[in-house]
Picture 1 (cartoon, rainbow, N blue to C red):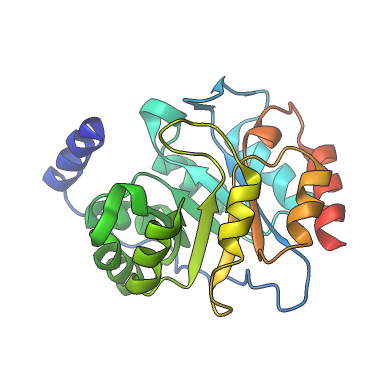
Picture 2: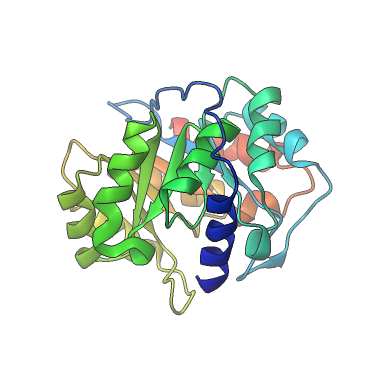
Length: 247
């Protein structure tokens, strides 16, 4: 995170960007309806390396929207994921009907200002990175009108998220230290979340069958990343996942 802190220092030295378009309300609670699908856009990742770039980020977002995505997760970290806040601006302009999650290593309020300027509707807050500062950044996000997906991996982080007042919690199937995936562990942790919390299962979903299994459980939403990003055209795979999510 040292590199991220250097990036934040550069942001703080520049004028604070003006707010962008108004954030749109998130409607991800199932309430007896279909599983919501959050579809990710990233050019590379530490675990997978370079990912398919046949489509531009704007073209890929359009295919996601046309194939049933309920939300777009857009990586803005450049060093590890090849992202930028400009991607959010471009995608929001081209695909205004689908809300956008700014997926970033948020450590400081200035990053929230950049996300808000770019047109994000929500931001990712990672408890593993923030610890007891989760509540502080959650309040700061809400003060800017942004939703917040609070990411956890275990029971201790669940407690921090709930004490912070999180009402949208994602359980990462990937162990952030070992980078191995355990979808079953994530599902079990989701089962322990209070009913008022919108719950998302993150990482490790590769097929329509995987999505169907999540849809049969407690989760309100599922985030699909690398499986879609490996496809030169994600439409067919996402279409099958959409069908599985709808039941």
